[in-house]
Image (tube, rainbow, N blue to C red):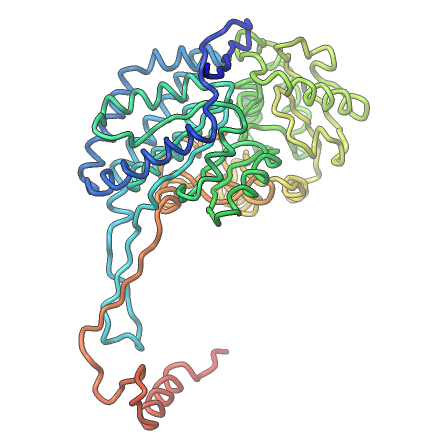
Length: 490
């Protein structure tokens, strides 16, 4: 029987980039079985053995950076330079995960408190086993590797289902890993459509799923995981806000805003979609934004819309926005498949789909606000809560706005800068998902805490966990606790 296949296409030209098998549930089960065996070997290597191999993998990726960037360009359409930047960030995170896993996860002693004065308590984080990763197409290296690298560093084996739009990238990442770790299939890629990902999520031997995609799809993946109580870390969509305070550097803010909104054709989960500008700087900011956007060209500065079906959503949002707001740049005619020219619309009502729903295109809505407080309230009035940006020269106010922004990450006087800091966790709240990748939290996300308490000596006259316990022993304990904790603080 012939194996069913599918093609990955260059979204800019429609040319076939590669042909890949549609791996069914049987193929996925076999991959998970191989991963289960490989996980035991990978765990047994210990932190030092895994670190050495992961750093070697990092070197292999760095040596193939141009090759991988070209493949990302072909399958997503993004400029080669942007693809190279994605690879650079990936390599930086892989290096951090490899070098810090032991320090974050190793066994350590913890305080026992008064009740446990005779105990020694330790905490460590142990590998889960097999981790399934279901990746996206918009950043087909950086985003899934935020789970893969940290899961591997934590001692797990990984089965990766890349997006059906960018399967070649996922397959190549696994092939290059095998150059560094030829002994066992510790990192495998399985290709296919939604059924392949569903089979991975439903396998009871998969101890955790890391998913990146839409909120609606995340709910379906969670339903599959629920059958086996498989935990999931979900990084879903975003509708990220950009706040420009009254004392902001408007030139720098406009420059960052455009990059955050238009790079990768706006197909960035932590990209800028909603802009709130304090009245005092609204006019100069809009002049700067309008002047700068005139020089940004679809097909040159950013690529096409990678997923054809997204064009309908982008078109619907633009149509609605220009009916109720005022187009500053672009409009319905900006959609010329597979490209979308920059679109900026101001005064769009907050209940508009262009403001409430994720657009995932090179569009911005801009609104004037009385002050930064109103801007923050509007920014937080969203079901999503992934990331955001604050521009202000007042460091204290900027930090406070960033802290109060309902998001997993916030950048100050920069855009998406948190993604380049490996020690910072990455993830959202609300409809943007839960769980974290990157940083120490990302390592712990792919490990299970193991607590151990060892009695060092018996407490004289205090054998509390025994049927031979005497009433006076319990009375002694009650008096001690009352003395230590019974006084109210005012």
